[in-house]
Image (tube, rainbow, N blue to C red; front, side, top):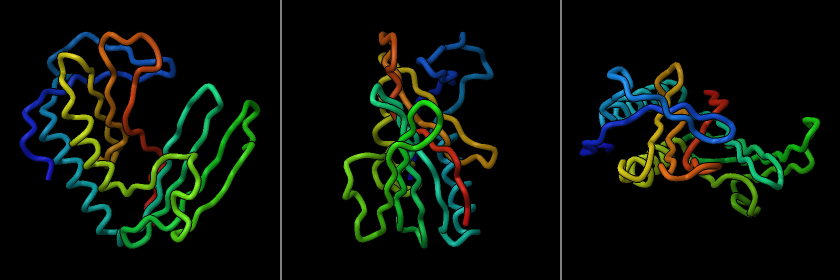
Length: 172
C-alpha cells in the first residue's frame, strides 16, 4: 500500500484562518511516498500492540458553529460515534451517540472511518492532487502517526483547506 507516489511535499503551517506558506527550504522538502509509507507502518505497529482498539477525534468548523466527532474503534471496527456541537462559551448545544447498529444515522459529524481508511483517503484523494494547483500538507504526531493530510488550492484566499485532521488519538 501507498507506493508509487513520486511527489515532493512542501510542508505548510495551518492556521485558524487559512494556510500560510513558508518559503521553501531544503529541510522542508520531503519524499512524500516515503513519509506516508513510514507513517502507515508506524500506525500498523501501534495498532497491533493495542489489538486494534483506539479512538480519535475530528473537528469541523463552520458558520453554523463548531463540532467534534469522536469515533471509537474496537477490533478494527467502528463501534461508536459521538457528536458534540460547541457554541461560544464552551458548552455543547447538541450531542448524540450512535452505536454500531445506528452508525451514520445522523447527517452531522464526520464520516465513519477507521484510521486505515483515512490513510487510504489521504493517499488516493489528497496526495494525488496536482502540486501546480494545490499546496499539500502532511503532518504526523510524536509516534509518526497521521495527524493531518490536507490540500489548499493555491489561488484561494480564505477557508480553502480541505482534508483530514485527527486529534485526540487514544489507544485503548
